[in-house]
Length: 509
Image (cartoon, rainbow, N blue to C red; front, side, top):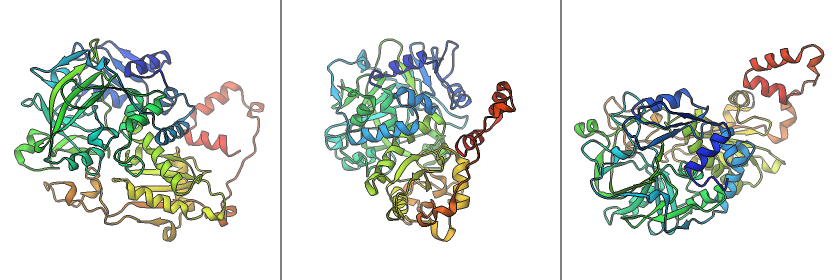
């Protein structure tokens, strides 16, 4: 939506749409924020006006936790239409524009930097080592990204004894990994960490590991701009050769030092072991582990003057799932379109597929010639998506948003000998997938170069085109039940139906 150019615009829009709860009672970023997020998962967005220890800051949560709310934000009717809009943005990016003056630089701090005194990082669980910054978006524009623009999530840990530098976790294979590898021990990599940014930027930033569609040098800010309906505004950083998102609430300016590595937690540093000691939960839905990562040095903190808003989704919730999957699903759909135009009619990544862990492709075979392309698409998706373990194809009479309907297709349409295959053995896995490290002995380090990827699973749950008449679904008669039941009874009866029962009642008659 063109006028949602900032997080503040989005919050005002959600308030007017009765989608936002504003809380005046004080809340603690340590555990309480995460607890409320989980309690209200898939429900209202919330803005906390009073944060313990941060009188000048505010906190927003659950912005994307309901798909219909996201549809409202982007002026579409449903999630499928959003993905069509995102596909259009991927293929027609709108270049960002540079401005001279920006809201994110109303306050500039370059001396006595203490990041955690300014940024209200959160802790997820009692096992977390401390409060972390996971809601920051790295932004690299120009030379360091081969002329394009990159935005993405990278978790950061500022410990009490390191106020102006942190660890920065960079997943192997990611855009930031590609950048860091290119400039490894050659020169510092200047960039900005942006918090409280335009809505579209979050959805693009979370869509990682689809680099066959969004390769290095691509314009990810341009994709966000096209999705938003107007160019993303950027501004030159005050202290490094980098750009910040102009309408951000908070910005950390600085650089990655690839000559040094720092530990994410004191416990990991003391033991000298990676992937052993707890960190905050990961996208896979399990507790994370602490690693030794590159060092990020902060040269400035900038922020809005009037009570800036921090936004940090908890992991493996509906909010995080939306950020990590909506544009990712659109890019997988674009991948399928390039393999066989028009065959795939939707792609969905439910929460149970753990953000990057899988995808369901809805397929409409038009002729016998289409037969087999669904398997090619499944194999391609697994091949290009680091961390994907499960790719499923279903027919267009299956509701990809209904787990029960997908399970029904798996049960009744899959030949174990013909339709389940493992197309990617021996390829690179993802360190954060516990299945890739389950064989490790207790206390053993879990690091990416020691992970053997056994393969992703592809399941073709589509009906063979030539036998489609054998798989005819019944259609029941449509009757006017008001002949037998009052409107009040009908309303009460429908309210008791589960979502799948309502879906079948509406579609199978």
